[in-house]
Image (cartoon, rainbow, N blue to C red; front, side, top):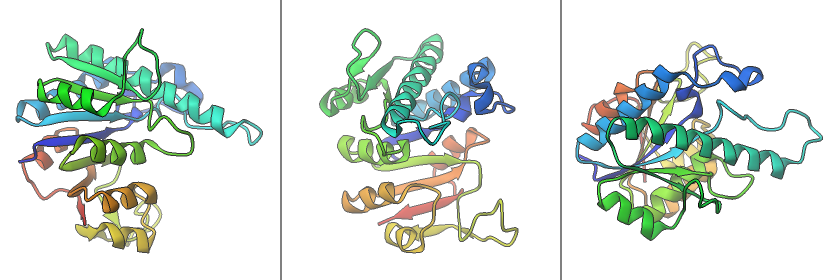
Length: 239
């Protein structure tokens, strides 16, 4: 059993299945938000300390013109992750769970400013910690933010949900003969250019000796609990 997990939760998890960026103002669905909150609460019920790095893709997916300032576009994405974290916090609190939003940006009227020691203290009190705002810097994705927070908070695993079953040797949406790789090292993913997470995230986990990343299909959120209990689902990436 894992002691402390960083769960990377995509924004799309909270959105209607038919949602598209062109219709982003409708990119929450109450039942799916509640479903995500129940999965996170279930993970905490296993005795695991849970930090959740929020994505923002249901609200913002980057520049809509080539002329748009990429730094400002990334800052908009960071704000989207904060909106999602507040949404999940509300759902968790309605379940009677204690949840704190920490942001990489200073906005103390809405959330706590992230500091690793304060986040660790909250985890050790049994709170669910929602880590928003990405890394606080442009040009880094929330995958890399998840690896960074795992290193800072001493997590023994990163859980990364995808729309496929794990790491494949090629894109299974384009190649019907793509093969699932159940076990692979950080260095192999980097050397082979496998893109299920950013190369920067794999490199950070390698450099900081994060024990494992579990990559699995999160269309079924119950897979979070199955993986936490040790079921052989998806791909194990390790040092």
